[in-house]
Image 1: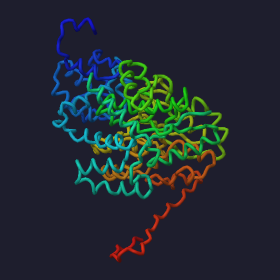
Image 2: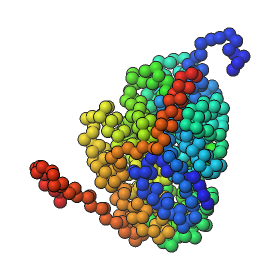
Image 3: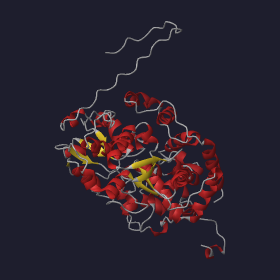
Image 4: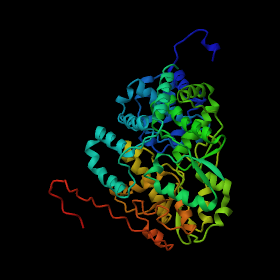
Length: 193
Length: 321
């Protein structure tokens, strides 16, 4: 809001979360009813339900918010979002909090600290081939974070191989140069919010 | 009817059966699907967790390519996650002009441009229900799936949140139920039909993911479903490939095959199991499909590697079986 900026103040956590979320997230409308947490399939394993997290955002408690495992345990099922009586874009806000948590490096202190690694391994293939590559993602991610669990995953992986449901090499799109240029420009623009 | 088609990465390999069965049933229905040339991954739920603008530019590149290739047209995505991402990007390209401006600046690097609202993304189920209708589908049924008990599983993203308008009830949808009934199957009540399969959680926290899957499988088993029918490659993969892990962790004995709704339609159209990619599932569908007299082709034996003449004689492991 232009009028409000006449006496400049540093943007609060709330302001920054809202600015980094596309569209109108309605974050300021939260009435603390808890419908979100009650609807969430992984709510029981979250350190804060979305409702609690929004209260922390309002209170400006940045570290607690960005260290929480909540955004990383969001399964993107949108149950909370369709049930929210205030139409808050909860799932999109979770994505915003994930990005901020990576930027600030605070995810390392969360109990879900290997979750961003999965996203990063996934996008490595997207950024270099234009397509996702399941075998590569699973191999890199698990070698890096769960090497001891790998034998347990073998039967499933072999089953997928036997049924010819897993590519051994990634597929590459034709205009990789164009895609790389788009992504580089997007990253440059995102720096200037 | 002609549509632009976005298969998505999963349908290229792990859900190839979904792709093949979609193409198989589209021929008799007169559904023409033209693939977007050089499409890229939609980023699933991962890119958006790293960089907002790059994620939206990645998704919108597909919409821009579709606009360039087809002009104003409906785009069909059979994968629920691709459907969600494409429709969400389209919605925000209309709703958030500053975001749209930046996305187009990025797209301009590859001479592309997209105006929100030009390409309407729809899921395959939407198209079959709304543009073709049950009567048109029923007209092609030659082998109704009499006696097969189906649990219709919608998962999340096809019914929620509906960025481009709601298609069915967000919590208790019925379109797939009606579609399966129209091809002769018995549709069981499946209260968890729109509950989450866990998505990428199988990679991040197995206990949370396997518990979500256990609840779904238990629910289908309680209603004595022979098969769970899905419309999303992620749901199929999780329920199918991790069913053995669920059984191991919770000491359960689930054996519920997970098939795509297009495969069921194909069977009712009298197509053979192999064309429809049946046999690719890890939880064997043989016993369930025997109920309706469908024979699943035996697994292809793996190709034997021929030793090359230049190869040095090496000790070999004895062959199995």
